[in-house]
Image 1: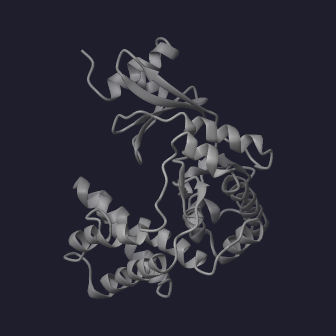
Image 2: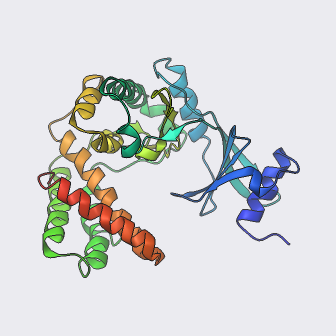
Length: 306
């Protein structure tokens, strides 16, 4: 008997790699996907909520590679549908290395760190320069720039959820910081529609892969793909220091509007806040404690970010 989801995923993977066992793979269930790495060479990504996967995800990788301007590897992306289990999944090339977490970045020399920053600036220049027309024609998800402020202010899953979930738990000082974070962003987005580009849309430190020996960037993984505000793709860089951020901006070849950097900080802070919100949903006390400590540390280290 097959129990979803792991056994179903294993059955699908065995159609490509007959006889492989669970202990011959690496597994993860982070974000929105169940992930299995086979032979340290191929990644299978199954949506945690089964859904159709648009071919535009694979197309966009091809468009990006075709620019010839990305200074590191990108994982090829194949979209598959298994008819037996009626399940869509992605199959991509595995990039060896480790996630560029802050503790890993701390082992890099200044020059190696700034080299990564320059490469990220070039990468985002290529990504954000892709034409919107073909992406829209193929159905890429898109933010509505004219009313995103209203979504953030009024949608029960946005700022109202933060107040409902976190206000009973947090001290007044941290609540005030979060209020300023969201309300400044809402006021800015209300004043002028946000700019739109094709973006990675899931730019966390653990999606930037580096070689722990050579201290070079190996590539970027786990694209979510969305037409949205380009500042959202800069949110990981806050964890590597101001010199890193400045170097990325120097090598980013698109206009940066006056509110760009404050929105970058909003997206970074937003993820810290929602990291705790989502941890509370799980009831996992260890995870809740980690996310609670992470948010408190971030607020302490960024008192003037809002």
